[in-house]
Length: 337
Image 1 (cartoon, rainbow, N blue to C red):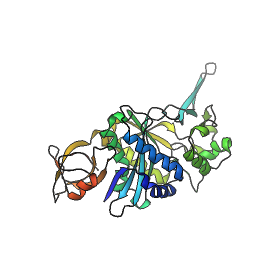
Image 2 (cartoon, one colour):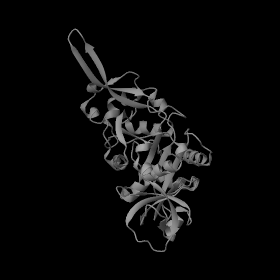
Image 3 (cartoon, rainbow, N blue to C red):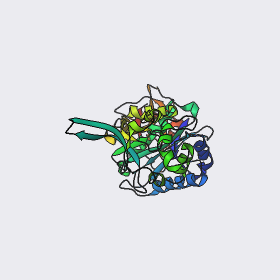
């Protein structure tokens, strides 16, 4: 059985292996021992803090195989972008020009560096073992973060965003080569590595401060704007089914799309319901569900075959009760897979 739980410092060696295996472009998951240690300690401190309003807290989760203890994935939530450092992105909107004399009005797509997305909750650091992509495990790893938000809404913003890794091939990003390469003289992979080790700020400060007119970019770079890396499609699709939509913002390094949703429109938040756990040695399963407890530092979530009665308690086997860290009579949260 797989269970999602908050990261612990003892997870560091396995977490670094996940970071090593992650897709190029996932800058929030650097293959660096000290940086990962900082992220773990920040998550632990956030879970221990008495939070009544979204700030710079981060919550890091790992997906663990309970049979052998191996970590098979990780994901993270940053409570509020812009608290600890500016959150930079590229706004993709037409730049309008007009000539009254010639009676011509024209709009040209342009990319502008901005901090418009400060103040949003950010989903990041998503990675799962390749053999578990497009399985219930992948759904659990992504969506259990949203159930955590549902359990602790005061800790998060009203809007949620995530950046999906943009297109690259063999470590080459046409978008980066057309824009960022000229300002940093760094290959795409190295720029992403530096961003993961430090922050986006020092790179963004060197990016052009004036609009970049899209038609002036090479066709290969234009084709990358809003394009998802093939290995990032699963993460995109899960959140699209949750109610997330693309907007006018793209990643400033690879042009990948940004997804956004209001909490009031996210399926795992609005359609999940609280129930009371009960004990049953056998379950007459009628469907597959995501199930979580309502904990904070002891938060747990699993996928389970259950018989969920909208009006009554939810029967859980001894193994499920143990995996969730709950006892009969405790509250749990359920939503259909």
